[in-house]
Structures are given as structure tokens and as C-alpha cells.
Length: 161
Image 1 (tube, rainbow, N blue to C red):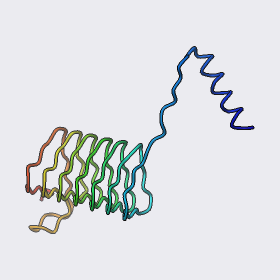
Image 2 (image 1 turned 60 degrees about the horizontal axis):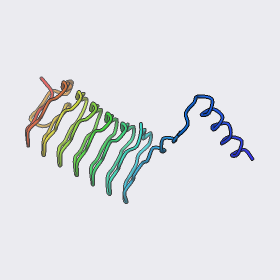
Image 3 (image 1 turned 90 degrees about the vertical axis):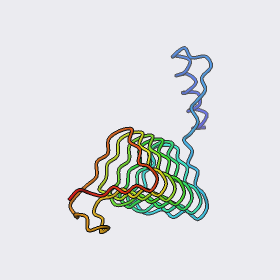
Image 4 (image 1 turned 120 degrees about the vertical axis):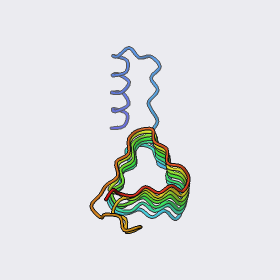
């Protein structure tokens, strides 16, 4: 059969490489909880975990090993780097791009256009955003955040005028 031929071909290739105890890598796993809503053009770049009640809107990219917790809203047009963790009830939207190893705590709001570097922490209740109508902020700005930044609990950062 075809599967037997494929198995023999893999065994022959492994033998020719001199690898005696070949163990294939496990397939990437995606864990999706109940009542999750997923929009169009979701891109998963590796194993991810999407918890109960999360909403992933259109054009979302999740890097490998991302976790999106309960009742979080991600998208539209959001990119999360690998190993990002979005906690319960956090919101990322409208062109937010978050680098690898970032942590978005409970009830934080990140609204783009926004670019955050690697290893940033957005603590509980932060409001980080551009194109905000809050406090009459300019509508043409964007927020660019470097690496290793921490935004403390309930801080507000809005686009420049």
C-alpha cells in the first residue's frame, strides 16, 4: 500500500543518515475551548491555546505557543508574536502588532495602529491606543513601543497629537 511504501521510504532515509533512534516530532497542537468565535483569515503559526468564550475577529495572526484566555477579544487586523499571553477579558484590536513573549493582563485594551516590541508587559486595565476618541486625541497618530517595556496597572497611553 501507499502508506507502507511511505513508511519504508522514511526508514530508508533515516538509515542512510545514520540515525538509529529516530523519533518524529509531534504534530503541532491547537487547543480551542468551547464557545469560541473565529473570523475570516485566522493564521496560526504553530501550536496555540484559545480558551472558552474567546473571540478572534478577521485577519488575526497568532504566533507559535500563544495563549488567548477566556472572553478575550483579538482583532480585527491583529498580530501576536510567538509565546504571547493574552489574559481573560483583554482586548487587542485595529492593527495592533505585538512582538514575541509579550503579556497582556486582564481587562487591558490595546488599540492600533500600535507596534510593541518583544517582552512587553501590559498590566491589568491598561489602555494603550491610537485613533482614540478618548480625551480628544489626534486621529492620525500611532503608538510605537520598544522592547522590554512595562505598563503598570490602569495606565493610559494615547496617540500623540
